[in-house]
Image (tube, rainbow, N blue to C red; front, side):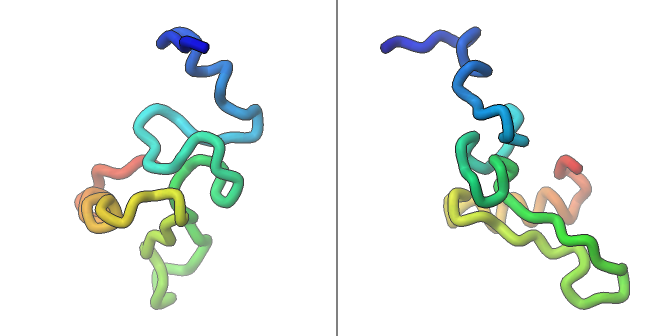
Length: 76
């Protein structure tokens, strides 16, 4: 089966939060395609601002994404 660019949305499950540019896999059921978990913490808590990456995000992207996020280049 050949997929064309205009068909990409039909391949994404309705529950997925994936968007083009998201580091996760569109069909990942762990973090629903986002690639990471954002925890609701207070700024005074030690883990505040730390990304928790999904296993579907390649290891070589972790440092790059963390750096982009710390510079304010990440998406909310």
